Length: 453
Image 1 (cartoon, one colour):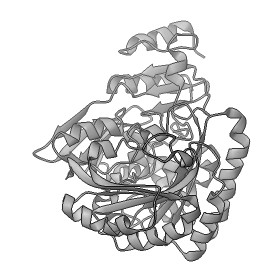
Image 2: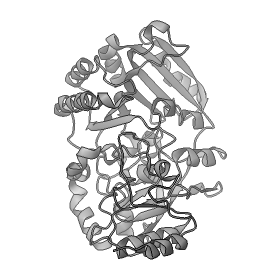
Image 3: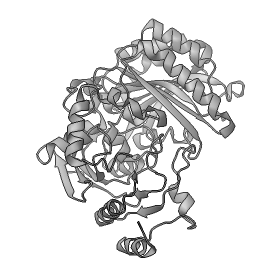
Image 4: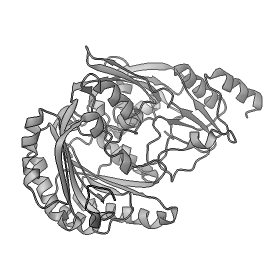
């Protein structure tokens, strides 16, 4: 049982006062990217340093409070916030330190992809990350980390050198290949329920500052032809090139022709991270393919590439996701996908294929907790819309599309794309690594204190 004195003492132990229900900052502090999440923590601790996190864990344990941990708050399932518990908010801990000589960076657990990209690109360096700059590095990294650099340099976790973890009993541990190696294995793809990771040390690679990019939009009627081209294009691509193929609604802005505004289209969006002239040559087949609505092939600062999908995923809207892995794009998968996406539900929905393979596939499936190394594509069904009245029909459409594609997939799941109703499928995420993760979990968190993270 808590009394006001205990709460007051806890608040005074922190660098910033607790945020409580009724406080002017409460609703903003409890909000996350997905507007469908409406949870009400009993209190919110905005942490400035490791000591704040340790004090928060001790207080929650003493008073049997459920906890959640917020980094970027971009997880679609809303695991950053809990009902009637303590929300540990790391967002003030967003510092990034870059060592350009050693080509490493240390980022605090509240940093976003944008924070990390901005800091590293000043030196023409980067770590493989995702493709939405508002995403928190913590959630992205702990789940694996898929993005434009993956085919050349691997997942985010393949470039992780060490982490600082605060365990359920309040210990501050370093985990690396040489120190607590079992914990280091687990956090590379195993998610955040082993402890609160307050900092990440990454290996960096020379990227940019400019890279060659391509975007080609085609009519939704051309979906099958575009996917057949995309299959061959990606199978023949060098590891410096990563290309996404997605269905989305055409933005109602110039330079898109007005008669396509707001209508579904299929887009191939690519990034080449080698020499610009080499990239131009590698995009030549795309430049010659079909009759697009709009086609742009040009250099772009890599830091801007990393922000390019931010506007399509605005904060506070309604989001519901499903996903699959595929080892190949078969003719049957292309036919089924094309038939289903002609009737795209949700004005913010993006449905499509992410490129894998390359360096990602050269890591053994048991080398890290992330086992899905044999897939060549990830299929994301990232549904989004504005009006709460559309929740039921858009969720049903998303589930139906997901189920229709099952026969063409590996059966594996990507933890960063698990929505609220997918949590019971966690064994499908980890496959042959699941039992080892359970053993490590029982060692570092035997009471499942971090079970909601």
